[in-house]
Image 1 (cartoon, rainbow, N blue to C red):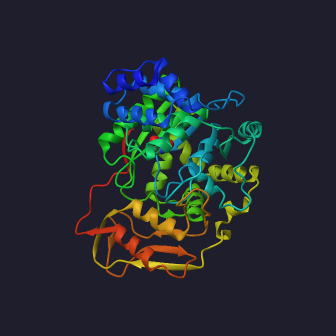
Image 2: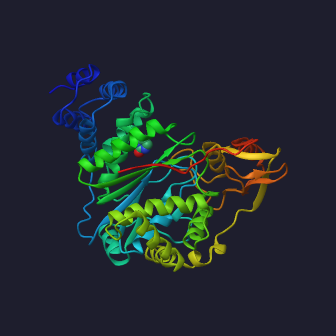
Image 3: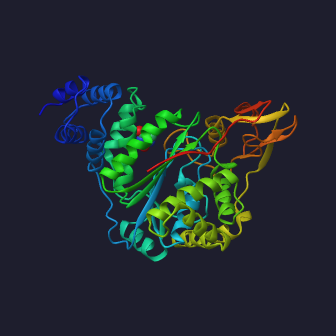
Length: 432
Ligand code: URA
């Protein structure tokens, strides 16, 4: 088999076989196929697409380029979730403890975030003492004991994806639905869960700018997962504003704690309940989404979800006092209000701009290895369809910087204020 023939076949619009895809990904991973040929193939895929079957073979080839977690030593159904990247997205911190409190095993490995705010791991590290590192056997033991573990990656999951993504990033081939789907699903499948709920973001702050493309991506990921024997759900959600109110690591942990106390922002609570409800049904604890939602609401009302978060924090070396007393989290030195300069209704909040402003405050990384300031971030005071008067607070910067004018301006510019309310739904579609 020759790499060039595979490239030509895809260039001419034909369907690749399992053997051809495996040969190419193996060769690319071990270095016998060079970057220039991989660039040509990814560009051919970009233009000609892939069938669901090809995308499944590609996912499996990337998945088997590295370690695959074996969770069979964990009793019961193991569930996982994934978001395609949102600003203010702390869903795992609420969904995990809620489903685990119902006896469903939530065994999650996360990566670190680049840009915006940190990823889930960085948020967890805002809790003093929380250790994201854990050998695989302890990970399995902890999930068996308390139903949940949220850790960094052990071993090397999908190394071919790392190499391929770096190449796509500099060859204009990131925005290809089969390449995105296989990239995400290879890593998810390597983490070993039985059921996976995907939150696919749509909108200006997301990879997928419109519902049509997001539907294609979500459908393909669901099909790949099902082809690999997993129970799959994808939820398409609107990313035309940040999720919840808090953007920034400790601020987001506090918001997650508030949500587990039944006092979270409406949109964030709604998304957590929806994602968790699908996992509860897939975890066979409820027959319908409605029944699952009732169970989850009960776990919030009785604080069982909160107690499970505290157990998780304690098991991973963190100080669980912070979960019951979030006022203990170190605050930023200054709070600066960003005010509205007109009357009207908020019609849009540029999530990407808010994420970038939070990163400039120090809440996220612009390059690998940058330090994160857990205490800083942005708390929105107004969300889409809220009424505002000139001089009202739109958002508050939590900052340790002395010069914040440029960042305050970015946050102010992120808000669009119009004369009328707009049609705004958080959950756009469910794909099973
Ligand atoms: N996230 C990924 O992990 N891979 C992509 O290709 C795009 C988003």
